[in-house]
Structures are given as C-alpha cells and as structure tokens.
Amino acid sequence: MPAAPATTADIFCRVVDNFGDIGVCWRLARGLTAEHGWHVRLWVDDLHSFARLAPTLDVHADRQMLGAIDVVAWREAALSATSNAHDASRSSAPLKTTGAKALAEPLMPRDVVIEAFACDPPTWFVTAMHAMSAPPVWINLEYLSAEDWIEGCHGLHSRRPDGLEKVFCFPGFTAKTGGLLRERDLLLARDRFQADAQAQDALLATCGVPADTRAHIAADGASVVTLFCYPDAPLHALFSALAQRDRPTVLIAPHGVAPQTESALAHLPPAQRARLVLCRIPFVPHDTFDRLLWLADLNVVRGEDSLVRALWAGRPLLWHIYPQDDAAHEVKLDAFLARTGWPDAAKVANRAFNKALPGDGASAEGNPTEGTTAEGTSADTANGAATADGAGTANPPAHTASTETHALHATDAADAADAEDTADAADFALLHNGPAFHAWQTAARRYADNVAAHRDLATTIADYGVRATD
Ligand code: TRH
Image (cartoon, rainbow, N blue to C red; front, side):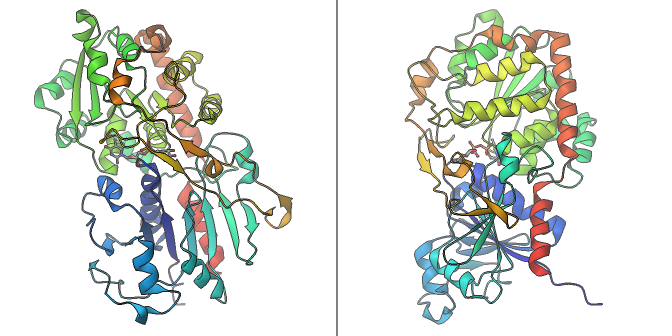
C-alpha cells in the first residue's frame, strides 16, 4: 500500500514583541517536521527576532529552507502581489529565495493552517482557503495558561460568518488541554546531560563562559543560576539571598537582559558581593538554551516558552511572568503555582519576584537587547459562536489569552536599576536553607515528570492534521 502523503501545514507567526511568539512557533514547526513528518511552511513577520533563535537564517530572504522548514517572510504587500489568491503571474518581481527546493510553488493554503496567538492570516490567504473544496483545518494556537477555564475552551470550534471554522488549541499543564511543547526523548536527553559533567562544561565553554568561571563551578562547586527576566525584577533581594548560600554562585545572563543586574550586585555588602560571579553570555540557539537550563541549580525565566523549558529542566525556577496591565498575570502565576506541588516557600519566592515596582503598574522591557519597550495587542477573533466539538455553543471567556492587551509601560532601564526592590531577601530564604531547597528540587522534578506524562502539544496538533487528511 502506498504511504499516505505527508500532512502539509502553514504556521503564521506575528512577533508582538520579544521572542516568545517566534520561540513557540519555531519549536512547533520543528516538532511537527521532525517527529510527525509534516511539511511545514512558517510565515514570520520579523526575521530579525527569528534570527536570534536561528542564527543561520537569512534575514533578507523572502523564502528560504531552514532545515526542512520552508520559511516565508510575511510581508503583506509583496506576498499578496505574488500570490494573490492563485495568480502568480501578477508578480512583477520574483521573491528573493534561498535554497531552491519547494520554493517555486504558489503559496496556496495547505492541509492545516495554524494561526499563532490570533495573529490573523492575510485576507487573500483566507479567501483562498474559502475557495478550496475542502478548506484546511484552521487551528488557533492560544497562549499558555494553567487556569482551569482553558480546559473548557480547548478544542472548541468557532464558525465564522463566511462558513470557515477555527478550532481553539490551548496549551496547558493538564490532560484536558493541548499539552506543552516537548520533544520526544527530551527528558531522556536531559537526564543524560545532567549526569555528564564533561558535557556540561563543554556547553558552558560553547556559551563563552571563561575557563576560570567554569573551574569555579567544576572544582569549587559553585552553583549556577541563569537569569532571563524583565528589567524590574527584584534582583537585589534575590542576590542577597543567594549570597547567603553555603556555596558561591555563578550568575549567567545574556547580554542586555536584566540591565539592573550589575547595579544590584554593586549595592550588595562586600562580603555578599564576593560570593557571586556574573557571567554575561551571547544569546544562544534554542537547543543550547535548553541545556543551559538543564545544568543550572536555579533558573530565572520569563514569558511562556522559557517557563516551559525551565519546567522540563526539573529544577527550581523563578518565573518572572510577562506583565499585563490588568494584573491578569498574577492570576496566571497563582494558577501555575497551585498546580506545582512545590513547597509554600517556593511559591512565596515566586510571588515576591513578581511584585511590581512602587508607583508603576506592570512594567517590562520590550526587547532585552535594546532596552526598548513596546505596546502590543493581539486582537482576537475568538468571538462568535464557539461549539464544543459541534455540540452546543459556548464562548471562550473574555479573558481568553489572545484577547488580552499586553500593555507595557515605558520603563527606563536606568530607573529600574536604581529602584528599590519591592521584595526582601527573606522572601527567598529557602535558597539558603539546605533542606528547604532540597524539598523544592524534589518537587520540581516530580512536577516535571507529572506534566510530561500528558500528551505534548505537537502531538495534539498533529492529531488535528490526521483528521484533515482522512
Ligand atoms: O521573550 P519573551 O519575554 O516573550 C514574551 C512571552 O512569550 C509572552 O508570553 C508574550 O506574550 C510576549 O513575549 C509577547 O519570553 P519567552 O516566552 O520565554 O521567550 C524567549 C525565547 O527566547 C524562548 O524561545 C527561549 C529563547 N531564548 C533562546 O533561544 N536563547 C537565549 O539565549 C535566550 C535568553 C532565550
């Protein structure tokens, strides 16, 4: 019997700000390709952000193959001119391409369309979907949340006035959600890496950690803390607690991230300051980033993709959650903490790490390397009748993640650096209490294993594709 043709898919990604949107889409594209044999075309409107995660990307190419993935620079005007619903002959200038294979075909919709975070595929593309005798399965991939309500919304369908239908896929931590991105054998690879001191040292060397700092870790037993947070994190209080550990600490932070780090260190009493070594490293590709988290004793992460990767590390983590101006992030943080089974002191530390600066609402840096701020919205189209697998109707609640406005207030990095911490070192006391920290380590590992028992997100999505090609 001839093999069934591979499922083909379009993933649309609009970079609102930072790296989370493209981080999720890039991992999903790779997972569907490598583990489910899909042919994926990934549309991205900001190749510069993408290139930070995939350094071999040509930011000037309109189309290119990145490994097995067909990357399309999502520039509305150029693409609608070349592809306008079916008429490639209207193109006046050919798209610049890199890697000839599969790039000459017209950009017609495929079996499955994945719209990340309600980013709205181009109108001409939706028109082409509508014109197909069997329109693609259209999946709206939503933001991650640990809140209960997403279980009720995951898998809901929404019929548009033009008759096209979308299905809502909610990533989450339970069996009733879409799951989380987790590559096959990821935890096995993690376990091997965590048992291999040489591989860890080699990874640190790859990241540019100098030999004397690596020796501090390998020979002196310094613990490793990675820092990937927004600029208003209460780092002075955190560092003060870390300085009271019985082992010295090496802090590893990407250049430009948390610009208040140096100032927070400088304000420590000299005896505490001497316990901490800061190492700035370049932004590293995804696989290296994951391994860095695996080798650390504590990971400070932010956004949703780095949270998931820190979860899989099975190590204690502080989540500096992406702030929202209606404080919705506090609800999300609490919902996540409630699921973890972590010790109360770990929850206290996480909440303290997210206390807003005095007089400021939620504030955050837009781009960690440029110190800019952004105001982004991802307007949702999730309204309208939503039916749970066709039975009855329901509307996703108004606080569906993609309906929220991600308002970021302008924050001067220097202000953040000089601001008084709202948290206190006592909030992080479990970091220097051996038994308490050990309890957190055990619980972190257990929770990662619990969540990994559920189906992963790429498999959930691949199942929709199977239905599409049935
Ligand atoms: O960059 P973020 O702050 O993105 C945020 C969040 O996704 C948030 O939920 C979203 O609403 C907002 O953007 C618009 O944090 P996040 O999600 O952790 O994404 C960071 C990505 O960068 C992740 O894929 C890991 C990757 N990364 C690397 O690959 N190498 C690195 O060196 C670092 C520091 C990160």
